[in-house]
Amino acid sequence: MIQIDMTFFASILNFLLLTALLTFFLYRPVRKFMMDRRDRIKRSLQEAAQSRAQSAKMKQEYEARLAQASREAQDIIEKAVVQGERAQAEILDAARKEAKAILEQARAEAARERQVAFEALRDDIVDLVIATAGVVAGKKVDSADDEAIVKRLLEEGWLSDAGEREL
Image (cartoon, rainbow, N blue to C red; front, side, top):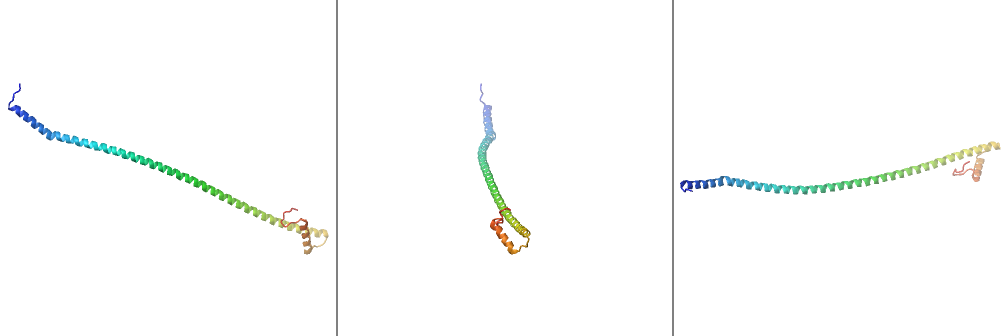
């Protein structure tokens, strides 16, 4: 049976005192430590969620900027290609015009040289005809006779001013 005496009351008092001391010195600090730890973990999880959200947002912004930069680079390349083709066409056109001008100049020069050659040939033929006529006629032909012979040859079409008739 249970005996109630002073030791019983002393044991109850010791138990209550020990419980109060353990509560004050052990349970409250441990509980405070656990609450602080729970709050730190909660804040850390919230910060991690915010960091994930922020990094996802930054990733989207980065991808958008990258796509924009890629589009701009493609536009620049396309403009450069168009500009290069335009420059090539302009250079080819200028080269064609220059070649045409050189060809026209060469044709004109050739026509002038041909005209000069025909005139020189005509003068040589006239001199030869006059000399031959003088030998055949057996007399010396003077300048009045020269002019008459040349005039007659021109009228008959043997000599032309343009030098186009070949003898």
